[in-house]
Every structure is written in structure tokens, then in C-alpha cells.
Image (tube, rainbow, N blue to C red; front, side, top):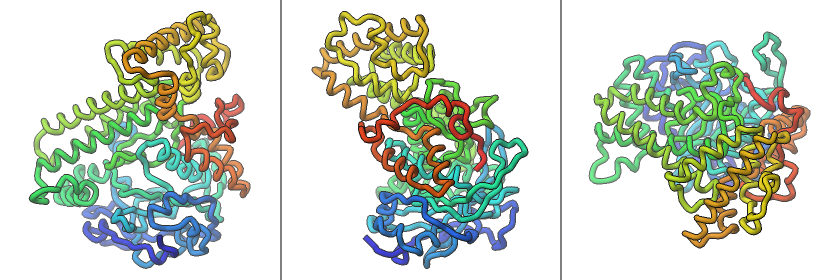
Length: 539
């Protein structure tokens, strides 16, 4: 463990091995023939630590005490560079809401460099909200405390849920004001500014390859693909030779398809809705990246989107996420086609996405219901009936599954319809009508019968089933209203709620009786309150 930031070891492979933008002035422009542009963070007036994550510091071999060093806020607020840092912003494009948007790029994200820790792992440090870059277009490159708290907390919440994600090292307020039109209604307001330090092995996106292919820069496309394989997929080159061939590209794309399928299954398992699944927001490593207007299903609404920009088309609604991921992978396949020059292997990889997602979804549903395995013959109908039943009334998805785990098969033979529904009644936002009650009681009876069959076949019991369910069905998720309450306090200079949520979300599957008040449905006052339901992309 090192004791000072100056001891961090930087091994900046990307800037060393890939071509830079020859223009060093920081102004908005189209950047061609380069992977990145060198750019420094914009200094801020009064950086102050809001919160830090000790587990992420440990990835960098840093102790928790590092957050108290005066130099920390200067470096990760954007005021100071460490020896070895080579700050830069990357060029990428993307399909936004299904349409090609051309060059996008790191408009407010600046990579400080790649730390190589004592285990030989590479971790890229990236400041989000650290000022303009050549890719900022008409924006200022800054971020506000509101959106930064949400990104900081959610990236860590997702990690502890077991969902692949970028991480967060620190959240720092800048002491400056940023003008934002939160509702896009022509009434901008001044908000407190902030910077998040994001950490990941790589922040490479589908769009990094799309922009090169779209421009016909195939040599640079190959250079970036080869670099990515050698840096982040080096296991593909193990053996007698490290030569990258057409077969290597196919295997690489296949792995991307599989990891993306696994990511989608995780999102669906915990009820997470990303909100902006543009191709530039898709990680080549299968990580959740870019936390904008995200949200968790509260009342089970498969067509819900947290993004006000998507409110009409609902392209990125919860139930559509696996299909959109496949569509995005198809766009990546188009971009990588010049390296493979054959459609069939790309189509086969996309088919593996479908197969892997189905496998993961069935496995996850078996665990969510506490079954030893998923039997498609009977369990697909059981699952379909459950999802239909959850829509008969407004039923909180997270709370429902936790309550379902408490069901005991003892003495259920004489249950009335009301007693069956009482098992999960506190998951309802309002009293169900007679039809909804009947539907739930009917499903619960079918579920209990399936459990009895499973117990006979496996020898399992209620306690074992409950443990299996509670290991995959979280008790605590970052509900939007909880995040907003933390934002409101932090805006007033009180960071205690950010710290408390960070602690609760470290153990999302545990009972944590001291935080029982956080295991609650969205309160009625939050149903339509700004930041507590749908959100805009404004940040």
C-alpha cells in the first residue's frame, strides 16, 4: 500500500501506442486521423471532498486516509496534475435514439492516465465534469452536483449488486456555479458544480470503432482494435503466437456479445433501467457506463423509461433493453466488418448474444424464485404469469421479491385468498381490487406447488430457498427519491446522506435492520417530484 499520490505508477498505454490529435489547442472541432486529443482539466475555485470510496482507492493501492490529504482534492478536482499523468479526451461517434449522430467524443470527460497497480492491473482515471474538450460541441464540459451524486452513488451501488460497471473513486464539489436548464423548458438555473473521478480498466465504447469505420479510416480502425485486444483481451492471444488474425477479431466480437448479454440479464434481474442506451454509452468491456437519467423499477412497469427525452418513443424502456443491446451490437458488427469481411461469423456472434441472454435470464429467474433450476416446460409459463400478475396493480418489484422469499410452505393448505395476498401485500402501492387479488392468490398457489415439487426432487427446504432468493433479489437499491434526498442535503453542504447511502448500498442483499426505513416504497410525494421519477439528460 502506498501512502501518497505521488507514488502512483502510470503506464499510459493508449496515449503511448495510438495516434494523437496533432492540434493541441482546446477548441471545438472535428478530429480526424486520431484516437484522442490532449487536453487539461479546467481549474476550479474551491474543490471540497463530498465523498470517497475506500474500496476503489484500494484498487489503486491507496489507503482510505488518502482522501484527507490536501493534494487529493486538488488533483481530482482538476487543479493539479501528478507526474506521469497525460490527460486526454477520446474521439468517438454513436447512434443516438437509433440515428447516426456523427462525432461525439469525450465532451466533458478527461482521462488523466492509466494507473498500474501492484497486481499489474491497469485502471484508467477519468474526471467527469472537468471542463471543455475538443468534443464538447456547444456544451461547457462541466457537471453539476445533482447528476454527479447520482453517478457516484449508482456506479458503486451497481458494483455491490454484482452488476459489471465503471467505478467511482471520489466526488468533489468545485465551489463554482454551473448554468443548467434541468427541464429543457427555457428556464436555466445556477447549480453547484462537481467532478466525479470514474475508474475502469478502459472507457472504450462501441462508438470509438463506429466513428473510424464511418469515416472509412480502416487503418486506424485496425490499429484501435488491435490495441484493444492486446490491452483488454490479451487472453485471446495466449498460445504459440500473439498474431491477431481474422479469427481473433471474430472471437473478440463474440466475447463482446456474450459479456453484453450477461450485462443485460443483470440489469433486468435487479430492475435497472439505463435510460440512454445509445451506442456511445455501450462499453466494449460489457460494463455499465454513463449514469444519466437512470432509474429502478418501483411499480412493475415493463414499458417505463426514466428519461424524459425518451418519454414519447420509449425506445429505452425497461423491457426493451435486451433488444436494444442486440441492435447496438449489430451496429458494432457493421463497424468491425472491414476487419472481417464476412457477414456470417458476425451473425453467428449475434446469435450467441441471444442464446447467452436467454440462458442468463432463465438462470436468474430460477434464482429469483428460489428454484434449483429453470425448467422451461413449466417455469416459462410460471414466469410469464407472474409478470402479468405484477401488472394487475402497482406492485413494487424490489419489495415483492424480498417478501416472496419469506413465504413458508408450512400451513398454507388452509390459506384464504386474502392470506395468500397478505404475504406480499406491503409491496402494493394501493389496495388491489378483487380481480388483482384473485390473480395474485392464484399465482402464489401455483408457485407454492412448484416449490413443493422442487423440494421433493432436491431435498431443499424453505431456508435454503430463501437464502438463494435473497442472494439475487436486493433489499436495497438506489431509488431515485433516495438519491434526490441525498442531493438536496449535499446542496446545502450536508454530505451525511451521501455517505449513509454509500454504506447501505455496500451491502444491498443484507437485511441491515438499522436501515429498515430505507426498505420502503417510493412515497407518494415523490411520484412526480423532479429527480424522483423521470429525469432529463441535463447534468
